[in-house]
Amino acid sequence: MNGYGNFVTKLARDLMGYLQSRQNVNLEDIDHLVTLPTFDLGKARTNEKIYNRSGCRIFVTSLTGTAYLRSRITGQTYPLFLGSMSFPFKKLYLTNDAQAGKTLSIVIGLQSFVDLDTQPEFSSAGLATQTTLALIKAKTDNLDVALSTLATDAGLAAIAGLDFAEQTTLALIKAKTDNLNISISALRDAIRGGDERTLTSLFDTLILIKAKTDLLDNFNLSVTSLRDAIDGADSRTLTHLYDKLTSVIAHLARINSAGTEAGYTNLYDILDELETIFDKLDSLSDRISYNPKEVYNVPTTYNVTMANADHEYSQALPAGTKQITFFIRGGNEIYRYAWVTGKVATPTAPYTEIPANGIVFLDKLDFTDKTLYFACPNAGNVMQIEVLT
Image (cartoon, rainbow, N blue to C red; front, side):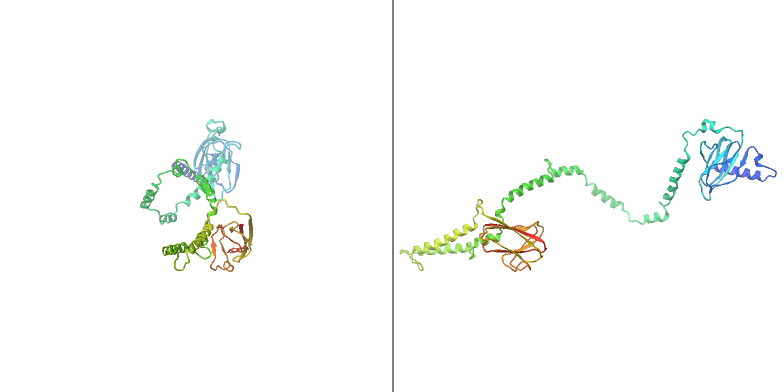
């Protein structure tokens, strides 16, 4: 309540108290001031007539709720507040919602009647309606509840106890973020380079490289297989060849004028031994030679389902098999293979384990009368085998 309202309220109460204390004084007979009974706002009202005489001033001496007055039932609605309101009227109508425990006290000031609704200064244009004011009140009622929960003593104490970052820590963080002195678009352009390469460009280049390496399929013979092919069935090495040639040279050096040497009848025996060596060299050459134009006659494909995990399965290879390729269909599985039985179900050397997505390719070998044994740790995989004869 402002200072003016306090003054008016106190003046009205003092005046009423004085007049009521006087004997033989009927306030209704005084043509200046009328005190209306206190209104209980716990009762809802809509345009209830509370005064039926002319007047020009209203003193609201007490108000603990919300209420509105009209001078005509269809006229402008005036919200009440502590203090005084000056306008001429003939009747007064009270409207209020039910507000338990709320009250209203009014004192009426009297003088000659002037019709309020005919005065331009009291025109309803631009004034808030009761509906609008009710909407505003609904919002402000919630505002008080929300604000009361924001800064309690307990809440402030809890905030004070938190471990907030110190100025030094914030300065260190700023020093790091200051290093982010390049925009994301600039970083992108720097990575892409002057010709604006993208991951798509890299992928396309890798596809081209793969197409080239696919042509090298005939060279994916394992090192051990190549070694075994060079050594032959009797595991001969270049050291053996060197020793043999050294022996021949020694024999040639000891040949006498008669053309003979101890252990040899004549030079022809030595030439026969050399011919044997050259035959072995030719055989070795056949084993390691590569002819990219060589064409195999018949391809055969086998699909063996490995229904059980860690169980040995096998496939006999047809006679004349020169090349074999095998792998797990769909990849993503490791597997084991061997050329003798009993080695792959429970891994037992010698066997070979191939990693997931691995493909085995063997070429230029004679697999006649050979059987491939294989197993997989997971059930339901299919071993795909392709042989060329």
